[in-house]
Length: 72
Image (cartoon, rainbow, N blue to C red; front, side, top):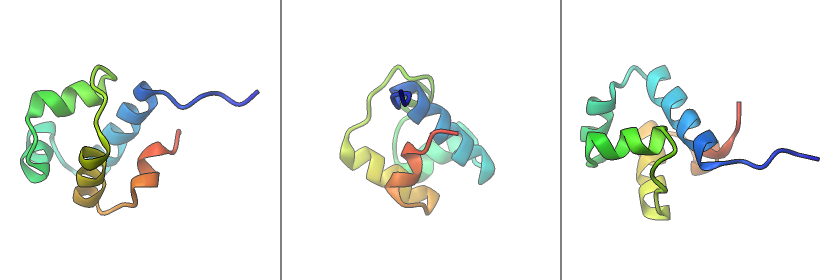
């Protein structure tokens, strides 16, 4: 049976992509116009971002939104 993608997986993927592009949490939060603590909460799996936020994050990273849902 295939493993289910979780909110924690989403957060780990966001952290991976953010770091690969050289962003700090604070720098990325400024770029995406969200609070740093909110970005941290997403990355830890404590926050569940809505679609608009996911699209803003993907745009800021320059990747399709689907890329955020690829487990590594």
